Amino acid sequence: MASSSRRISFMKIIVLGGYGHIGSYLVPKLVKLGHEVIAVSRGNHDPYTKKDSAWKQVEHLSLDRAKDSAFAQKVADVNADVVIDLISFKIEDTKKIVAALKGTNLTHYLFCSSVWAHGRAEKLPADPNCIKHPLDDYGKNKYAGEMFLKDEYRKNGFPATIIMPGQISGPGWTIINPLGNTNTEVFQKIANGEKIYLPNFGMETLHHVHADDVAQMFVKAIQHRNQALGESFHAVSDTSWTLYGYATAMYKFFNKTPDIGFLPWKEWSEYIGNDAEVEHTYYHIARSGQYSIENAKRLLGYSPNHTPLDTVEEAVQSYIDRGIIDYPE
Image (tube, rainbow, N blue to C red; front, side, top):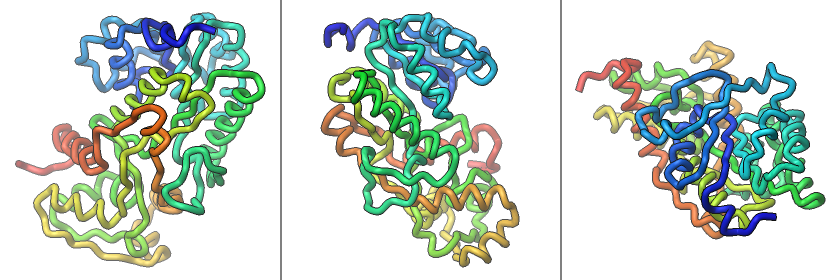
């Protein structure tokens, strides 16, 4: 095993999914800390932070996990000190990459799970290391990956850390709206001062997190490797908020008087009239998460820089700037 000092400075780090939501913020942070960074993606995609000069120092590796049966071995052939896996969505892929990385220079494997690995919580705020009851295939695969990695750590010393982002948000992509889905029309209605309807009593919760804070968590876990090994951490802000609180904040953002109604689930579903959107909302509010970051604060020194309101306002301003929402200022 390498010394602790080597693990926190001048390492070769490969980021799988390096140009996506998290990678766009994470890769520049790693470069600025002096690491050699290889960003893996399926093609030459522009990161959200493409203006950051740090990208000029990043090596790009084009690999397709879904189409290339040798993906795991090609990653292992890089012989990196640290592998950050942001794109493992199936337990089979997690098992393949772990098998391939054994015997390399690897000192730390960081797996991006999701708060969706939680199902209906028995106690709030939920602990990241608790027993989970995922509701859908996405969450089940992420949780299976978590359990496999913890078993590998305990039995074989495989150096794994699990990081579980909330609803990743920020400028440049589509965020979860106050209805719990991704339809941007609700923001336009709010901007127009129109009435919106929330399901039930609007008291279910969402837990938005800025991608920059998720990136911070990965960096902190690398810098505090010994404390991070074998642990799961929630990469979220300090607080979650209700659908009602979120909707009210958006009316205030657009300088409109809140006009919010409530409908029982069946009537609300009929009001929306879109099965995909209703299902998306269902899986968000069925969880209604509030996720503890106490172990991340204690073990890693994690401190989120963005509240859910900060995060959402930045994203909605991006909607305005890109013409997705018509709101003359």
